Length: 315
Image (cartoon, rainbow, N blue to C red):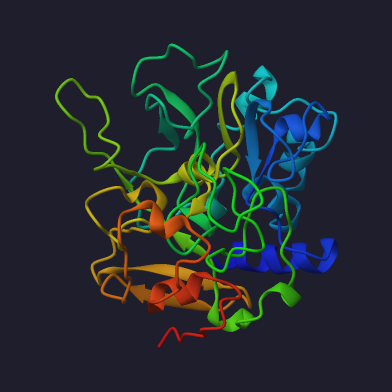
């Protein structure tokens, strides 16, 4: 995890910003208008922040082979890149997590590429390589497809105007100057454990499964749909609607198998902090959480939100 922290800092120094949460492959290919500043697009997947940090964590060869740049096909539309996405990278794995090397296919989710290479696959089919680390997108709740938050100029993705936003948002880099609550008191990365809770027949239970994430990003069948934070956070982001280590809906929050009852996190200054599962986190499970007018009103929220004005301490 420390290697990722140093990689993020090196990316900020070299690129004048931290990597975005994700970028739609269609955006890179010039075939679509970026959300949140455009309209609906036909998209086939996205590269996550982990893809962009590769050159800064001694994985330049993987970055060059993957080549997540404009004009190049994404892993959801390229057999070669799909194979690269199945490469286990130790920097993205928690040593104490007992998850598999590859994520398992779960219908309707973007953990792996449900596309021409995996569409129609049986539940449990291996997909993209697993990652235990996700980037902070929003303090409470990822913006879902088709939702327009009050005060938002668009739908489906949060923006810098959102007081609940974290340091990683779609198609936009965050710099140190954006971290007005302080780089030492704002979460950049946290961990998500691999926990599989199947129903009868082996199918996944989205409300009871914690399925970690992927380092490369995600994908889906090519359809007319906007990239939504809700989809991207399944694979690469943190936008909790349940508390740490909650038994339900943990595929967008933080979780681990650590006996101490909490998770490891990295702040934007690169410092390490263990966050207890008992940290104050006020959640009302309604769309009110998604409104820009909803207050940032608990300790965990303040540690995620980058500029709400309510500075919190890890201690």
